Image 1 (cartoon, one colour):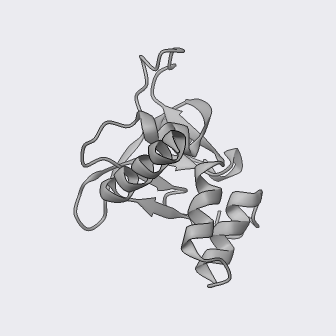
Image 2 (cartoon, helix red, strand yellow):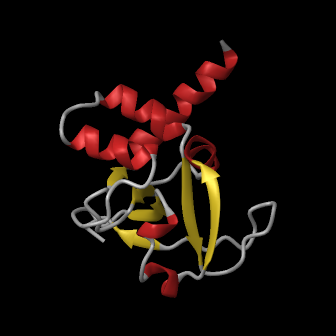
Length: 134
């Protein structure tokens, strides 16, 4: 899928960031309000029960990384491993993650990819919560 052009604002921001045309703080603001497509091995319920995320180990440290996608067109063969998909706003999804070593990889293996390790996720979640209280 490396030849797939950007499909939406998030993918254009990923490309712009990689090329140095978008500062990281601006990218992160856009990311937090962008929809992500998340796969699950079973059908998730409204309350989140039944969610079985597609997880890849981080290539260097081995920490678990939940696979998310910036558009359904980027999912490809991963749908065979986890056939259920739901859409969620990135910031809302990050707030629901447990405070563990789990991270998120957006578009794993794709040139339009991006990783958020657990410490970065916790910092973003703290910023989201702080913004709400102000």
